[in-house]
Amino acid sequence: MRCTPMLVVEDVLRSSAWYREVLGLVGAHGGGEFEMLMSDTGEMQLMLHHRDFAEHPGIADPSEGTPGRGVLLYFSVSELTPVFERARASGADLVDEPHPNPKAGSIEFTLRDPDGYVLSVSEWQGATKEVDPA
Image (cartoon, rainbow, N blue to C red; front, top):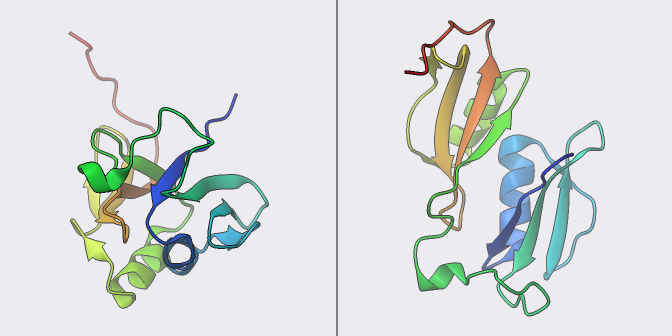
């Protein structure tokens, strides 16, 4: 099973350009209503849909509150530094700088996309320490 998130956005073309520039994703559909964003290996990573989403009942319009409240998009990459450099060069809203996450065994940083959705970008560094669940 695989889960591919679909974000409701104000401007599909703007958001698609942002994800392509910052994360290096590739557009596979294009257009102002809907976009499918793929990895360089052809795997779908994310879908974008314009706020006019009548064909998807249950989706809330993000303009009526905080976009993605309670959701964090987590992107795993093989090399974090180029992604962070592209994000900074693009003027992305950086929440934090790259830092170690010892519980996950990764280096990661967090940023917001043009619609206010929060995402973390992570590069796995190695085995994680066993954590006592109690």
